[in-house]
Image (tube, rainbow, N blue to C red; front, side, top):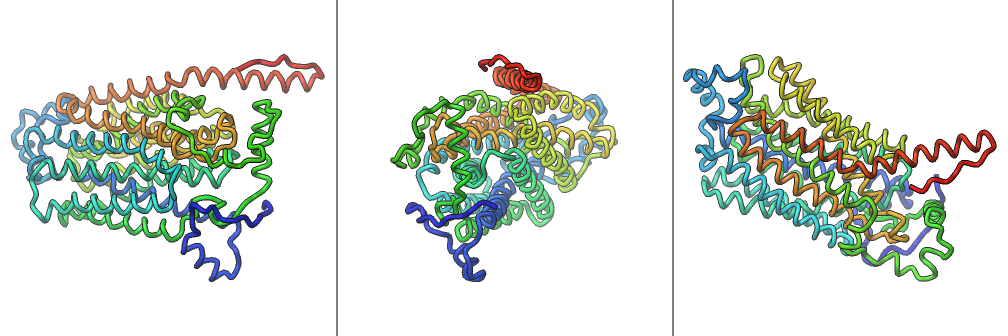
Length: 524
C-alpha cells in the first residue's frame, strides 16, 4: 500500500456528497484503494446502464417490423419457406402485426436509418464530449449525460402509449439520445485512467470493460421480458435505470485523486522517472511551474500522438462489426430457422446475450494477454484475424442446432469484442497518458473521444448497410463483416511490426547480458 498525502482538492471539483457521507460514517478519510474501488464500481454500473438503453432498440426491432418478407430468407436452408404460404403466415402470427411506420415493406430500411441517425450523432458528439470532458467537472458532465439519455430513451417508448406513428418523431428522439449518450465513454475512461497507472491496466480495464457486455445482457433481458406488456416498457424501464445511475454518479464518483485529496507519491515519481528515461529528457518535465499539467490538449495535437490514428481507424472497422451484432443479432436470430423452427422475439433476445457473454471473456483475455506481452497492437490484430473464421462458421453452421448457434455465437463475441474492448479502454488510456504529452493529465477524454468517436462512425455505417443488404442476402452481410475484420487487423500492421521488432531487440539484449556481451541497440 502506497503512502498517502493530503493535498488541497482541485478547485475545479468538489468532493461528492456520497464520499463525504461515507467518510462521516467511517469517521476517517477513505484510503486511496477505497477510492479506486468506488471508481471501478460506479463507472462500471454507469456505463453498463448506457449500454442497457442502447441495446433495447435491437430487441424491439422484431416487434416493430415483424414480417419483412425478404429479410433473412436467402439462406439455402430457408428457401423452402419461400413457396410455403402457411409457413409465412405462421411467421406473421408469431411475431405480431408490428408498429407503423416500421411494419411496411421498407420497415427494415427505416430501422437502419434510425440506427445510423443515432450513431452518427453519437460519433459526432463524441468529439465534442471529449473536448468538453477535459475542461469540465466530469462528475457533473456525466450526470447530465445520463439523465438526458434516460429522458429521451423513455420518450421513444412513450410513443407506444401516445400512439405516435411519425417516423420523424422517433428519428429526432434517437438523434438527441445519441448526443447525450456520447458523454459516457470519454468520461468514464478519463476517470478510470486518472486513478490507475499503466501497470496491469490491460487486465484491470479488460475486467472493468465487462460493463459493456453486462449492459447489453441486462438491456436484452429487461427489454425481452417487458415486450409482452407493450414495447414501450422496453424503453422506459432502462431509461429510468440510467437516470437513477446518473444520480449515483453525482453523489459518489470521485473524478480524480486530487479532487478528494488522495495521492500516492511513488506513482508520480515512478511515472516521471520512466518518462525521462524513455525520452532522454535532461530537464524536468514540469519544471517548477505545474501549469503545464493543467493545460488541456487540443484536438489536432491529440491526433498527432503516436498510435492514435492507426488504432482509431482500426476501431472504425472493429465497431462496424460489433455494432452490427449489437443492433441486428436478435432480429437475425428471430428471422432464421434454427433446427427448422423460428424463435420468438423474447427467446431470440435472450439467446443473443451469449454473444455478449463471449465478449466479457474476450475483453479479459485481450487485456491480460496484452499486459503479459506488452503488445497491444499484436493482441488486437490477432483477435481481429481470428474473428474472420469465427464469423464464417457462425454464418454457415449456426442454423444446425441451438447448441451449435450458442457455441459459435459465444466464439464470435469473444474475438469481435476482445480487440474492441482493448482499444477503447487500455489503449485509449495508454495513449491519453503518452510520454509525448510531457506530464499533461488533461488528454484522456480527448484521446478516448477521438478513438471511440472514429470507431462510432463505423458503428453507424455497419447497422445502416445491414438494413439494406440483409433485405437481399444475409450471406452478403457476413461477407461485409469478415472484410471489415480483415481491414481492422491490417490497419495495425505497422504497429505490429514495431512491437515485434521491440520484442526481438529485447530478447537479444537479454541474451547478450546473460553471455556477458553487449547487444547492439535496435532503433524501433
